[in-house]
Amino acid sequence: MWDERAPAHAASPDYAIERFLTDPAFISDVVRFDLPLLGDVAGLDGVHLQCHIGTDTVSLARLGASMTGLDFSGVAVAQARRLAAQARHPVEFVEADVYDAVGALGRERFDFVFTGIGALCWLPKIMPWAQLVADLLRPGGWLFIREGHPMLWALDERQDALALEYPYFEREDPEVFDEGGTYVETDVVFEHTVSHFWNHGLGEIVTALLDAGMGLTTLVEHDSVPWEALPGKMDRTAENEWRLADRPWRVAHSYTLRAVKRA
Ligand SMILES: C[S@@+](CC[C@H](N)C(=O)[O-])C[C@H]1O[C@@H](n2cnc3c(N)ncnc32)[C@H](O)[C@@H]1O
Image (cartoon, rainbow, N blue to C red; front, side, top):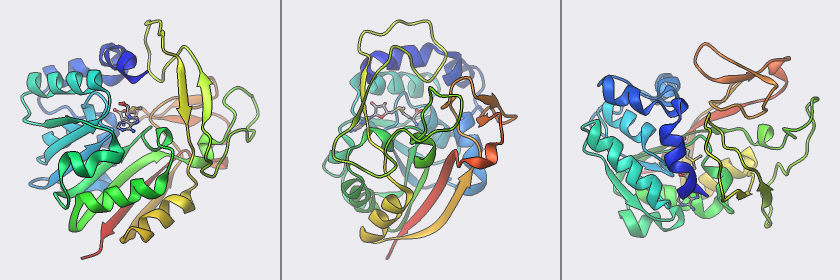
């Protein structure tokens, strides 16, 4: 599914590849949104887990970080390498399953792990994910994740009223979707339309990180998300995000979490 989506996403105006090539100072809307909580990454060694086509990875490199990206889609990794070369940023991209990241990249190698925006929902288990994040970090290193809120992901996107439909808590079995579309604007008709989705409650994510030896330093919930998660019910914001048109304060749309590996 991701191999087929990667080229369509690279061609979509929503991923703004052209802007990276024409404007050497351009960074993605996602990373721009993150800046106030991200702080200065210049001179740090960072890894972007589930980096997809590399737009956020290259953005972090443009902020001065020495970046590595990891994704299990070979097509996405090839696209990410092309972007970094064309944008003239020496980013290393590695093709591997995120659960094998420590073997593929090395233990205690990074000052920070960056991930999110449609990453955790494809992973069946949060506990081993939290452990691998901790294992990748040097003591004192930190995780930065901005992600779709598990409360938003529990909502039924097909109904007009807000209604709970999908699990909030992690479950053994995935939710299986068979859908032709994707989360960005594209005319491409996809052949591989089946996806598997797991939610993880906010408490489960925090507990997994604490159990892995990380200390929570930031947890902020936002009333916007970078993609149109509830189609037809959201408006674009000034920051190029999406927010529920009707009383957006009823639901957390996304969250930013930072956690530090204890020394
Ligand atoms: C929604 S996309 C990426 C989101 C990213 N924030 C972005 O917008 O560029 C999800 C990515 O996760 C990757 N992925 C899913 N499961 C994975 C796994 N087990 N290991 C590594 N990558 C995985 C997919 O290949 C895909 O590139």
